[in-house]
Image 1 (cartoon, rainbow, N blue to C red):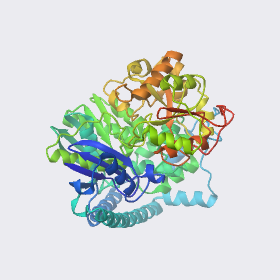
Image 2 (cartoon, rainbow, N blue to C red):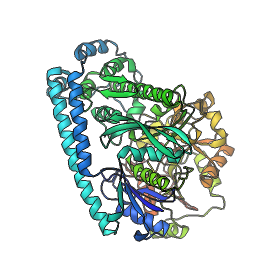
Image 3 (cartoon, rainbow, N blue to C red):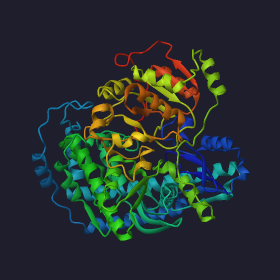
Image 4 (cartoon, one colour):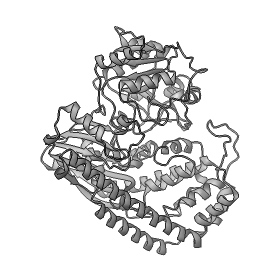
Length: 624
């Protein structure tokens, strides 16, 4: 049974080909189009999947799409907002301005520098007119209720029109491939539950999905057992933890779909006690359910962003997200008696939240689907359909599911660019030596990673010995980040570096959860440890990625350290590189020291660039 999985077209469009429960190929359209979070039909990714697997369109049995028809979605959206209107009438909010006056007394005086901020207590700077408007629209009950209702109506109208638009495009493009009559649709959160459960390897698991919106919902609770998924509870939209976090991301001046990770990093510098009680007062939580008052009223968080330090907003939102999610998971762990927790949905890209969920009493093991956002949904529904047809889905052991390029293809690109290169007898040892000597190495090899994380095949590598690297390399790569680079660590050294790993080691192979660092790790790899003492590692095994593993092994021989910094290899605000041409372009424009591409080693034609003094703002890896 061959299933073509197509993710939602509204952003991060992705295609996957699944045969009898095994994912043969999966990649995002953005990698081929070079448009970040590509919206629209993933025609290039589908073509790549068919070519890589030698599949003709007529061999496809089913096309899996993780949304209902636009008319069905429209009815679910309208029903969701009718429910919200009733909740808003019944909810009794506390006196917000009195709460904020008390909160302002809790703001501490700070002097310690935070790189990326002009001042540790920096607030959003807005005109007087905007500040007054935010206070009215987000903080004055008589006005905010009407504004919130209007914003909900606007959201509904846009969403319904978007569903109609993408349905038309999906039907038209599938017809061109002769696949229109093979389309099957599902309720969105079934696809998230499907990828989390079927890829986890657990026979019995509590499945929690949390995102912005999907088929009238903002999340779901299910029990997976014996290959079957039983829905236990729906988390209704618009009481969405995804929307909750998007509001503060936007209000802090970041792109809500791309930069939530900046808020996660920024939160560690702030004090959640300043504003957390203000936020919790807007939540209604009982019986394993969550509802949030005026959740889509962005003017509430904008109002707070002009009155309170950015770091305290970030800290409060992150803390409340963690606490609400912990309470939710704890309830359903008790209800089901199941200690295996599997996660999917865009909110579960929040690695700090995932750490807290791993620590919940009763949770014994954790798995987070590697492509947890909507880009992973087509694969999830495809796996589910295979299981329904009697095929056992294959658990994920790797996310290297994209295209790969032969040595001859790579050599042709290097020759066309007139680049000098060598083919070392022991490439891992040579790469390790150069990193040990302080050079920044870009690595391109093997199959491209599926999902948002760079996992070594499309990565920039550097040693983690000097904490200053987070400032000079981010500046060189044109970034503003508040979380350090992520470390890649040899599997055998994991317990030397991280605490409380038990049950989440497999999740850590995909860089989806943070851990507290050991004292040895904090001392030996300060560049990879955040201010709160955590890191988000990728644990690597030799049988999963031999060349990558051997680079680490050779580096450990030289340094005694089994970790390197791994950050993604891509141009500023572009997707991770896909082809050899992309890699060479990024390498040259980014003024990196060395490109390890396939079996070849390419020194920068300008010579060693000088790690601290020279560089370009042209290149920026997305610190996903």
